[in-house]
Image 1 (cartoon, rainbow over the protein chains, first blue to last red):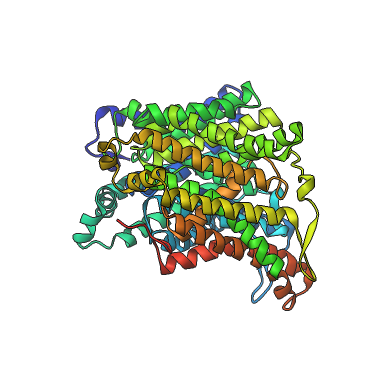
Image 2: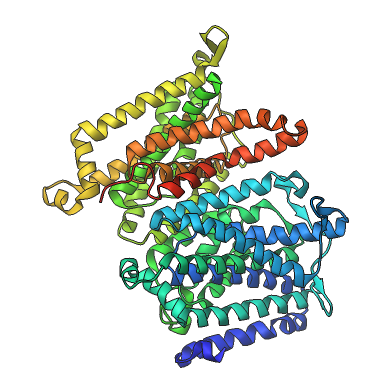
Length: 335
Length: 301
């Protein structure tokens, strides 16, 4: 992580180091506390954290308010779900022109989930990036809703009821059925993306992206084909979000259209802003904070949304910079 | 076919009532309101309940419009006006939080199940438009009332002093203020107007669609498609966009099953047709965007 943090303040290094150490040791701590059930909960934190960090790449650095991230999250989850479903079921995914069956192989299914989500992001991105600003928000939301309806129209994959998965992904020497293994695989994926994303944000590519956020017209005048840069970032974000969805599907053993709903898109966006935009680390913290808050509130009352809603409104109205800014001293654009 | 076209126009009129409020609020305050569907939901719930308790359709209608407009003014004055100068991202997040809150509040008050919205006696049954074509009176009433409201809105925005202030405020905010117009009052008025129209749409939709939590977001996303196609900030664009979306949705739902049955066995044709039909409006949006990224009637400036 060192070169991703070059020039960083001591407080920032300390925050990242402490966070990394906690995440590394967490399964041992939970086993020692005799609460191994919570390892699964933590996998959810990591998966949502990965999805939130992926959104931050385009939202925080690119200034692109994508309200359709659930489409990539859900399609990644469904890709994993459908492959596992056909593998355990013995049925074929495609009978013609060539027979293709399902698979539970982790090294096939997880990259495939990212690939399918990337292809979807490319399609949605090409059209939505023709516009900007408010249009972009509404178009990404509308296209995500379209994907939601597409998935609903496949009765063999459960429609509104969703799909139960009878197995998890595995590779030789790496069985994700073991919760701790799944946790570390998710952690490696998250750490890899954070490292890659911070490097990317400092690279020429990232500078163009941030420049276009600040002043699109000026960047165009400088001769940059902004749409191509934005599309590339959008596709990377979609692919990573799809991988996060596939990891979540493995953990929960269940995929449903709820993963594709506009509420999920909103939730992922709240995580980014709550944690701190344009930092990549912040959204991970935001994901953990929001999911923990939801768990706590759900324990209090059935109508926990009545507390969460006004709380979020207050956060938007009265706070700036997010949790990560308060913790590490880092603000959007510093990284 | 004529019946489906009428249904399409009726959906289009409803969508226009929603889109008009959204697009006016955006046009004058540069504010993107995700909670616009919430006013639609409030109109449907408050209206249906008032109608059932009072037995009068008119009381239900007034309660629906007043309830939605009141909720809008309270929200606008207490929270939302702080967000006008804020980023669109924060506007989206704040109104997203409002959706969560109001959906849950409605669940607490009315329960999670859909509630029953009766068709008034004097509008039930059907009428023979031309020999061989019977059409439900209620749907016809929605179509006519909605069209009258659309005309009234056109008059209000285009021909009255309030409308002039709204149009001027959209393009030259500071100048209008300097001329002594209370722009805060105009803002609140536009907000209440848009919410009232949404509440009306929600109330009228009650007997046709299910009155349930989440109904607001369904129509909101369709409304987004409408304003993207029509051009955001343009009332004329909202009108044509709404008709286009209403017709595309209704026609594809009516005709696709028949078309696909020519190609494949009926059971799979119906399943696929239902899926593809719900995509029609999004495909329409994609096509319009590919040709005219700013919509059919882009706003000047």
